[in-house]
Length: 188
Image (cartoon, rainbow, N blue to C red; front, side, top):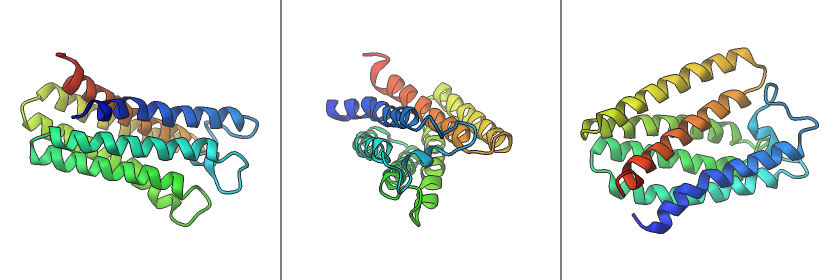
């Protein structure tokens, strides 16, 4: 993997989370973690919707560039398929920025990001388990199970979906950074 792809993988989530955080600060007078969706911060007609949408698009592009390098690194067919599904999730992430809340395809691209991102990391981690990395495989399965259980709880406990969305985001990011650590930095 190219060094530029590693840097893209490191910085991509930071850019997205920074945009979300800035949008939360700007819209703190009306936005609530328990009553809204993250997408409410980038909806059509909101004066500063670009504060979240532009960083999401940049983040998605950088992450796709990183995952193109990751795809070459994994050998197992299940891992390759999982990384491919994960990349599809990143295209959906770009779709969230291009089709913000208030546009027709927003709901589908939003769900596509969470579903493909999570299923992709589960499949890729399972493939790595079959490659012989049992500890990372177990970590992946446990992380996915915890993500699903906590997100289901959050959907029932709050009127908004932002907490469930953040659970999904942080599960994906935890897997992403743990994979980077194990595959590219641990023994370097």
